[in-house]
Image (cartoon, rainbow, N blue to C red; front, side):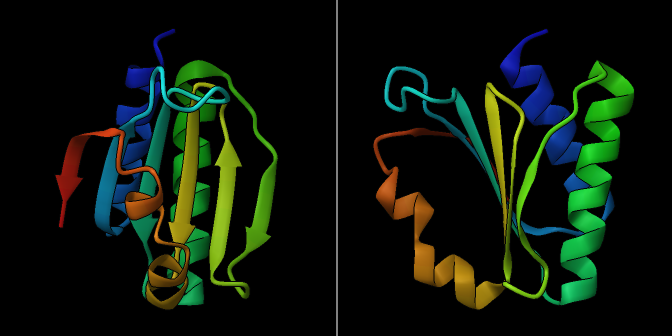
Length: 114
């Protein structure tokens, strides 16, 4: 199983659930704890829940991977660590606050879907 394949599965699931501003960052050789970040915005708590469940279901069905989730829809951010891929789902305000794209700007943008 390739991390990039897992990341693309996550991106597809987020797109199916109408996630916004989806970014796939390649952090190989930059971050010691993962190879890829997938970052996505959801515009409501209901949407944040749908996005995380959609991504987790797709990865579980395709790769039989489970993950622990940190954060909640009420917090405005949710993180799921799949090992080679870390998924970040944010409300618009939390995404701006955390600024992961700027923080990890050394990473290569593999995909950006608006």
